[in-house]
Length: 265
Image (cartoon, rainbow, N blue to C red; front, side):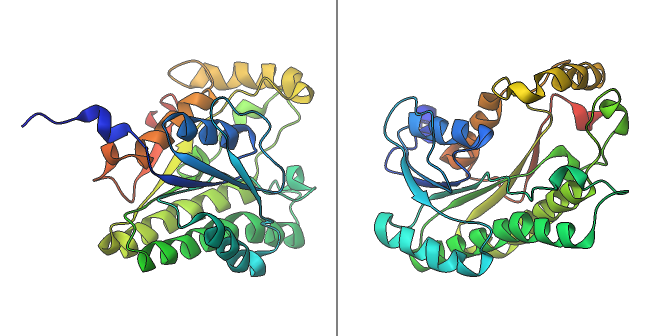
């Protein structure tokens, strides 16, 4: 019998929650899902700015208040229903985030960033998964991680810039990766798939403050990566669409590098 592969990628009648859907990568993910006929709810502190096609609904959520996440998510679910697709794409950070190198990080900042970033990913995913179980929903949970959750940071690429390695970032992303595997193991029996996407460097042409620094960083970065360029946000979002769809129905517990070959060498 001939298979309908086009239908496998269609997200019609699916509901997606995107945490951090107003962010640089998150907004592309929200729009990509929306373009595939999926109803998208953006969970963030500010509304999404760019919407390409249909309406994307904005709901407020504050990841700084981990203790109130369950109440906030429950209210959103009561309003819109339990999602089939849940994306953690947020990038919460403290004001002193750039000082989280080994030589400068302090315990207070380290603990705060772990709480608002790693802990929020864990608790949001757990809360959503339990609602999926109660409603017997065959769900897909996708965490936005990083290549630096898979390998150590290459310090050479920061030469000539004001950028530094960030130990807290690597610990957070490593934690997300291992949490993804553990969660996929537990919730598999409920037909809930859990995967993580691990992007390499993603080009950002919108932030004029970093363009000059980025040019030096890009030269250093592309010298090493096999495809000799940064990723685009649509290349990350396309993988999210795949992992959200029935085309990936037998994929769970995977840490998928989208890195131009960075982790291959």
